[in-house]
Image (cartoon, rainbow, N blue to C red):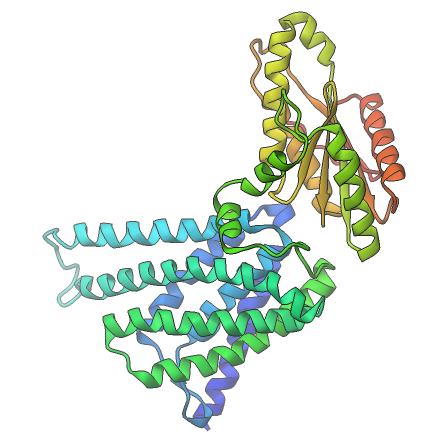
Length: 426
């Protein structure tokens, strides 16, 4: 029966797609997120091509395109996984890149169609009419994707109040609602460009709901068995908060406005650390959620002040605080503990995540410009993890502080988190 064969092939397509992209996501600490983003971009072109031309029949009279059912549904679920494991600032990168690239493709295709062409062989001529159709659908689809992702983040956070930590239910509910919205929105553009009828709208929706169910199971298995994490944050963002997260660091700046901040650097002050930091550790320990505490100290800062003066020292402290806050995730909090010492609270970070954050901060501080290249500013960082190292704030801070001094004793400009030193200088 060809309809049943088509259904089984779609399931196979989905397994291949999810397996390949989940592997790239899992390897992001080793090879970076660029490979994951590039793969999404290539698949974006293919999914639009298939959605505009390639449809198959399924049982019960359903007609759908693998581009929409497998690739686009899979892309949204992969972006949701990326948000769960990283943050909305990371999610916005492929969306903005896809939107810019698609607009560029559409614009260049419009210009290139005015060239006088030479056929390589008789009848072998570029089909710019089809390219225009593709470009229009890609721009429209990416614009819809932008709103899909904003709504998806909002809805995923809201589902915590409905389902608690039942990750499968949260993923399935989020995917079903967002893909329903997306199917209706994309169909508007598809109908305008290709004249597709209601059977495509209805059949595509039914197939996407089945795909959401499959991808939700796969994503749950991935999170539980490969990432060992099922949530992002305890707060529930409102619509304007999500736009702020996707564009600016307003959430952090709002906290600065509502609590004590250090007058020189703009970071949160030590009083805020004692209040918020202690509370964050307590909540993480009670919930069984991981949390990283980083203690950062600028190496040889007294010598920097002696050589360049205290005004230059203050300027460098501002630069360093800005580097730390820019490197940290939008959900992390940066405090000036005193003098040239800073603390970062990274809720949800553990193991490789915390080590990676500390190493990025170390490298960016080392890259901060000074007035004399002969005086390179570096930092030593101690990292402690709740609950593996300690479950109370005071002990956790003491462990991180001791590891900071281990880093200094070992030669400075390094991270110590209780594991072997894997520092990459530069």
